[in-house]
Length: 297
Image 1 (cartoon, rainbow, N blue to C red):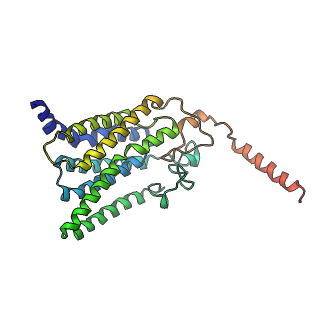
Image 2 (cartoon, helix red, strand yellow):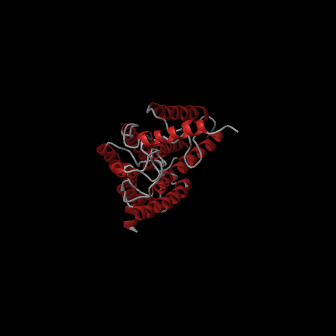
Image 3 (cartoon, rainbow, N blue to C red):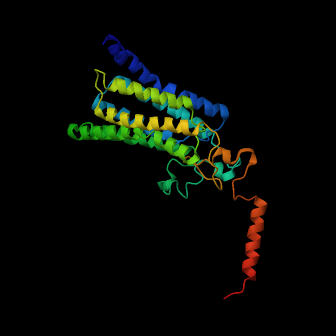
């Protein structure tokens, strides 16, 4: 029991606190080094930033373990850096794939058949991303000041934002799972991130169910769901690899994060059924004159 208590009381809290750095530092450096965020889902910073901000505002009402609060502040810091680096190194329209290589180029048509209202988190300019985060913080601060003097109402509000924030965090692997499925590849997703997620899940589950400090059930339930999703990501990595021969997609299909699969444009290769710009013009010209010469009925 001495070892279990030591791990639960000392090792696990320290691991939880530094986990944002161990999870995302390598991904951030990889994007900075390669000067490209292709294959990386920008929904990951969105999910972690919103979840961490909500968790901070959940603390005054729940008074959960201080290690989780410190982790939230560190997570916000590392995700802000990751988002900045990812936005700075998005493929431009002039790169291979043209407009299709630009993040969220297919957002007007909508991914998975559903378009996001106001192209949320699919903006071309970096400014709206930071404005959204600032407005979220201001709104939560105002609600905290207004509702805190009303204990009964504040208790319900605190529990609500706690469950919402942790539920959002539990969906963290889903954008990457969908992105990997659409491209049939894990290219752009670092194995170090996956390993840290899985290791973090195991440590969290151990800590959540052995800690003597206050760990609300919201953390435990959402942690179980996230562990299942991370395990599925591991299965995907074994199936697809980190960028091997993926499935060829016609006409520069856009992935979840708006990127055309890299292999579709490698070495100037064309997808089946694609035409050169000159060939496209010839086809359009032929169709035009054919329609003009066709007798009217």
